[in-house]
Length: 285
Ligand SMILES: Nc1ncnc2c1ncn2[C@@H]1O[C@H](COP(=O)(O)OP(=O)(O)O)[C@@H](O)[C@H]1O
Ligand SMILES: [Mg+2]
Image 1 (cartoon, rainbow, N blue to C red):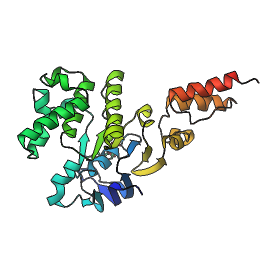
Image 2: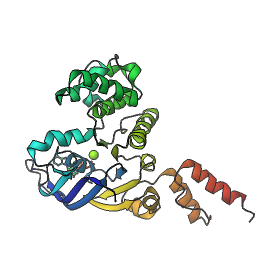
Image 3: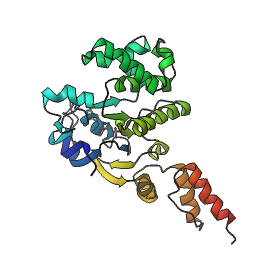
């Protein structure tokens, strides 16, 4: 049986009213469970509640109704908040907003220092985190001179130095060029695969969701689809009706199948897609 790391139970949430703007609920009775060691991608149109949900995953926001449990700890328990933040680390969209120091290694040391980790241990954690994200050789550099992808990897190292069980990344590649995106996605997948860190990746790049074990599609504060990338991305019409893209591989196969080609829709990776096309092109009829 998979063990849950984050559980929302009947989560309801409404932002406080702001001036004239009426407050309306973002979630009503939302139930989501994230399993320990899993890699979950969360996709959904703008404003559907992805960031609001992510902020409930480590107690940045607290439920208006229902509850959120992180490794069994309820996020409303103030005494547990530090431990909750240690368990679930967050990485945000804009790398520049996450840099707090002029030197890379000091930046990575910032969070564990605040958590009271002993100095000698901080050094080894910082070095280890920087090696893990492939940025060790930049440890004495100034973060603001690095590329977006490198800055985001420094932000991930900062979270890793807290030795979290789970990392939640809220559109971490949205401001990066394709190369930076690839660096960050590769780093994230490796943390999950090699270190067993639970990953929740919010993204609007479908190609990034293809690597996950599970894809959750949100719409209007609820869950529209939830399953493996193959089962989710083959629901092309449902995704399009929700205003979402499908991966380019699926789109190509979908259009071909509508033209009468006998191709599978679930050849998600580029290699699988190419193979599926070759099989059809080579078949005798
Ligand atoms: N600080 C806030 N105050 C009031 N409403 C907010 C705030 N942040 C987000 N919202 C609203 O909550 C809903 C969900 O937003 P959000 O979680 O940011 O969605 P997503 O990350 O999926 O784009 C939207 O309607 C948004 O306008
Ligand atoms: Mg968001």
